[in-house]
Image 1 (cartoon, rainbow, N blue to C red):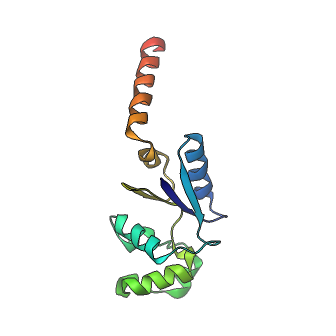
Image 2: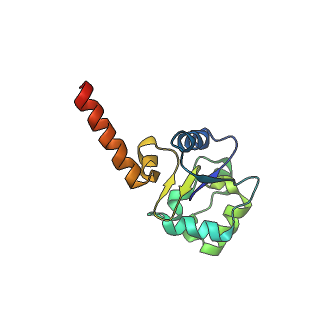
Length: 134
Protein backbone atom coordinates (compact mmCIF):
# COMPACT_ATOMS: atom_id res chain seq x y z
CA UNK A 1 0.00 0.00 0.00
CA UNK A 2 1.25 3.45 -0.89
CA UNK A 3 1.30 5.98 1.95
CA UNK A 4 0.98 9.61 0.89
CA UNK A 5 1.85 12.38 3.34
CA UNK A 6 0.17 15.64 2.33
CA UNK A 7 -1.03 19.05 3.41
CA UNK A 8 -4.28 20.73 2.33
CA UNK A 9 -2.81 23.76 0.58
CA UNK A 10 -0.18 21.83 -1.39
CA UNK A 11 -0.66 21.88 -5.17
CA UNK A 12 1.81 19.03 -5.69
CA UNK A 13 -0.12 16.95 -3.15
CA UNK A 14 -3.33 17.45 -5.12
CA UNK A 15 -1.53 16.45 -8.34
CA UNK A 16 -0.15 13.29 -6.71
CA UNK A 17 -3.56 12.34 -5.28
CA UNK A 18 -5.25 12.91 -8.66
CA UNK A 19 -2.58 10.88 -10.48
CA UNK A 20 -2.92 7.95 -8.07
CA UNK A 21 -6.73 8.03 -8.37
CA UNK A 22 -6.59 8.34 -12.15
CA UNK A 23 -4.31 5.30 -12.30
CA UNK A 24 -6.52 3.39 -9.84
CA UNK A 25 -3.75 2.79 -7.33
CA UNK A 26 -4.68 2.11 -3.72
CA UNK A 27 -3.19 4.59 -1.31
CA UNK A 28 -3.58 5.85 2.21
CA UNK A 29 -3.40 9.62 2.57
CA UNK A 30 -2.32 11.36 5.75
CA UNK A 31 -2.66 15.10 6.21
CA UNK A 32 0.39 15.85 8.36
CA UNK A 33 -1.20 18.99 9.76
CA UNK A 34 -4.47 17.35 10.86
CA UNK A 35 -2.85 14.12 12.02
CA UNK A 36 0.72 14.60 13.25
CA UNK A 37 3.36 12.36 11.74
CA UNK A 38 4.72 9.79 14.19
CA UNK A 39 8.30 9.16 15.17
CA UNK A 40 8.18 5.75 13.45
CA UNK A 41 6.86 7.32 10.24
CA UNK A 42 9.67 9.90 10.24
CA UNK A 43 12.23 7.12 10.81
CA UNK A 44 10.70 5.07 7.97
CA UNK A 45 10.83 8.05 5.60
CA UNK A 46 14.41 8.90 6.51
CA UNK A 47 15.51 5.28 6.12
CA UNK A 48 14.01 5.17 2.60
CA UNK A 49 15.75 8.31 1.32
CA UNK A 50 19.08 8.39 -0.46
CA UNK A 51 20.17 11.74 0.95
CA UNK A 52 18.63 11.49 4.41
CA UNK A 53 17.27 14.59 6.07
CA UNK A 54 18.36 16.87 3.21
CA UNK A 55 15.90 15.09 0.91
CA UNK A 56 12.88 15.79 3.08
CA UNK A 57 13.45 19.34 4.34
CA UNK A 58 11.39 22.08 2.74
CA UNK A 59 13.95 24.84 2.47
CA UNK A 60 11.21 27.13 1.10
CA UNK A 61 9.11 26.89 4.26
CA UNK A 62 8.89 30.02 6.37
CA UNK A 63 9.67 28.10 9.53
CA UNK A 64 12.91 26.77 7.97
CA UNK A 65 14.10 30.34 7.41
CA UNK A 66 12.89 31.46 10.82
CA UNK A 67 14.61 28.66 12.73
CA UNK A 68 17.89 28.99 10.80
CA UNK A 69 19.07 25.60 12.06
CA UNK A 70 21.94 23.57 10.66
CA UNK A 71 20.22 20.19 10.43
CA UNK A 72 23.57 18.45 10.07
CA UNK A 73 24.34 19.36 13.68
CA UNK A 74 21.12 17.85 15.08
CA UNK A 75 20.69 14.36 16.44
CA UNK A 76 18.02 12.14 14.93
CA UNK A 77 15.93 12.59 18.06
CA UNK A 78 16.15 16.40 17.77
CA UNK A 79 15.12 16.26 14.10
CA UNK A 80 12.15 14.07 14.89
CA UNK A 81 11.01 16.53 17.56
CA UNK A 82 11.31 19.40 15.08
CA UNK A 83 9.39 17.57 12.33
CA UNK A 84 6.62 16.70 14.76
CA UNK A 85 6.46 20.26 16.10
CA UNK A 86 6.78 21.92 12.67
CA UNK A 87 5.32 19.62 9.99
CA UNK A 88 5.78 22.40 7.41
CA UNK A 89 9.50 21.58 7.54
CA UNK A 90 8.72 18.45 5.52
CA UNK A 91 8.64 18.61 1.73
CA UNK A 92 5.35 17.39 0.35
CA UNK A 93 3.95 15.17 -0.87
CA UNK A 94 5.89 12.19 0.38
CA UNK A 95 4.88 8.92 -1.29
CA UNK A 96 6.30 5.73 0.15
CA UNK A 97 5.69 2.01 -0.12
CA UNK A 98 7.73 -1.09 0.72
CA UNK A 99 10.17 -0.53 -2.15
CA UNK A 100 10.43 3.17 -3.00
CA UNK A 101 9.96 6.76 -1.93
CA UNK A 102 9.11 9.88 -3.89
CA UNK A 103 9.41 13.33 -2.37
CA UNK A 104 7.53 16.02 -4.24
CA UNK A 105 5.48 15.36 -7.36
CA UNK A 106 7.21 14.26 -10.53
CA UNK A 107 4.99 12.68 -13.18
CA UNK A 108 7.78 10.50 -14.58
CA UNK A 109 8.99 9.25 -11.21
CA UNK A 110 5.52 8.60 -9.78
CA UNK A 111 5.01 5.98 -12.49
CA UNK A 112 7.38 3.73 -10.55
CA UNK A 113 4.50 3.13 -8.10
CA UNK A 114 2.52 1.36 -10.83
CA UNK A 115 3.11 -2.38 -10.36
CA UNK A 116 5.54 -3.86 -12.88
CA UNK A 117 2.97 -6.26 -14.34
CA UNK A 118 0.60 -3.37 -15.11
CA UNK A 119 3.42 -1.33 -16.69
CA UNK A 120 4.31 -4.34 -18.84
CA UNK A 121 0.72 -4.72 -20.09
CA UNK A 122 0.50 -0.97 -20.78
CA UNK A 123 3.73 -1.08 -22.83
CA UNK A 124 2.38 -3.99 -24.88
CA UNK A 125 -0.87 -2.10 -25.55
CA UNK A 126 1.04 1.00 -26.69
CA UNK A 127 3.23 -1.15 -28.93
CA UNK A 128 0.14 -2.78 -30.48
CA UNK A 129 -1.54 0.60 -31.01
CA UNK A 130 1.59 1.95 -32.70
CA UNK A 131 1.80 -1.15 -34.90
CA UNK A 132 -1.82 -0.85 -35.98
CA UNK A 133 -2.15 2.92 -36.29
CA UNK A 134 1.48 3.96 -36.69
